[in-house]
Image 1 (cartoon, rainbow, N blue to C red):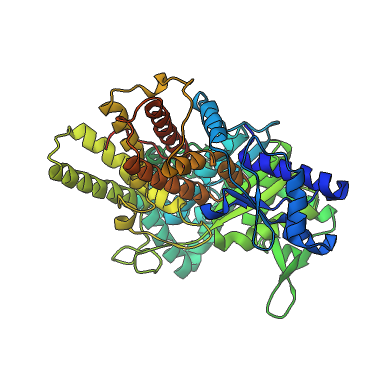
Image 2 (cartoon, rainbow, N blue to C red; image 1 turned 135 degrees about the vertical axis):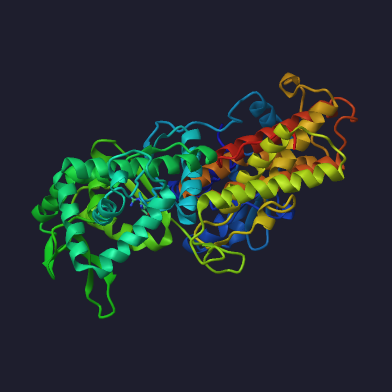
Length: 585
Ligand code: ARG
């Protein structure tokens, strides 16, 4: 289906050409949904923008456009408001026709992209031997939502986990384990990740204060890089150990990812650096090999370098990212590469992208986007920490959300004097707890920091997962109460929209396509959350103001269809955020 917005845009574009000639063929019709029903459903500001170039009064321009507009199937005659806005109000029978169309479509009328494109989403990407922290939680949740939206639209999505599985820290760790826990280097499962993290800290202390240990650790890195068998074996065990721990979180959050860590690109690093050298971009500076960046300067105004080879000859994070771009373009055939990391890495990516473009590794036809996000703060507005001041473990956060959801549900059941099985309570609290965490993260504009607040995210009122889940459950309640199978509703029933609440809900349902297309471009999933929140609010108003089961036909069926479409829209929208619905809660 072509969205209403797109149809209206096309109509305005055509009217512009008919009224003022083909020079205006590429003029943006400046059309957007209104946020006040007083001004109709959509508004175009194009007449105002043309006043200067056309040297005419904007209201007169608006009138000339309206005279040429052919939208009578879709809306009432457009009107001019204020200095020259053109307002469009959709015809209710047209809305009914569109609703009938999507009723029989599993995709609710959302089209697939044609032709498809290859998109890589690089997200989650924790570091081996380190704990997965709340920053990785954000990357995981946001990256997964972005991947789901693009997959639903029909893109060929490759979800990559660029884990930090290589680097000098392994030398230190292996050297330390050799003296302290030699069995950990030869036996699988001798350690768990908690041990690994504390061992890592101890190894770091040793490294910083003992010169001899430092030498040994450096030698371990050399051995590892040279492919010494026992070093590689030890490294492999450490990676497996971490991988297993990460997987627990991915399973819990229902995250699908293909691991392709930094080590994967080792064989290509040298080539990338010689490629930079061949293009004349490489400069030696203070012993390191660098490419100087345009538009990035230090305090003194000197250009900043992107270091690609350190003084000791080792490669780094940037070299790996350059090699990975090359691989993703050439081998994976990517058209768009999306990186989901904290905002602190913005300069890293800007530098890497610039160098990749200059070196010809990244052709203009391939789009690269860094999708930055802010910090996770505690309720007090400071960086989230445990009481003892440690970084918060991801697992504990998720566990606590589930426990709190369980507590809420048990209390509610008591109040309502309802009996439910333990199985039911477990299932509901797991879904509610995990959804609440995901939704709290996704509903924020990701570029800002967000406060992690269990009470707020689990609240049944407000822009929260439980509120949306509850709206969905309400619809299912209607079906249970009226003994109605929504899939059997007569699709020949004309949708009658007479009440304001009905009309508002119906129009909102039809905006899903616009919203999804917006997110596909902006990569801001909070737009979907806002849409679903408003949908649930409009449904609740409809539910309170319009009788469904006791209405007379054809209104009854029409309202049942509206309720069903609401539920299906919520279910689909939430699925794009990686959130499952509940039939009862
Ligand atoms: N491992 C990195 C971190 O924990 C994130 C990697 C992001 N992806 C990339 N291609 N650099 O911060």
